[in-house]
Length: 74
Image (cartoon, rainbow, N blue to C red; front, side, top):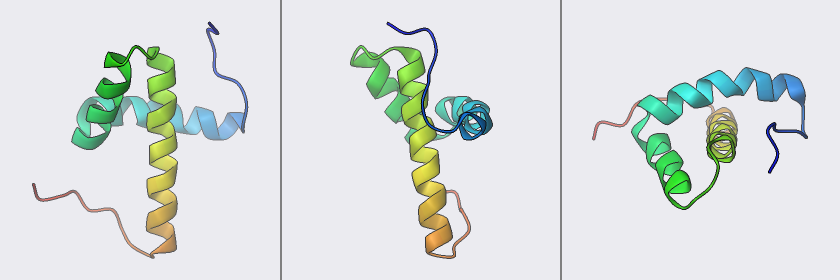
């Protein structure tokens, strides 16, 4: 098992790491995804990397649709 994450662009990884930690703690959807992965036995760093990827996908979708992020009213 690796103790660090490699590959991709280091500056993007560094820029997304802290937002992913915050999202995994406070965003209900991303928190659920993080907990699902950890419960399934994935290491915490792998789960954070998955949250980072979901942040990128969400940001790209918002940019493509020319929308701003809005918290769901649930």
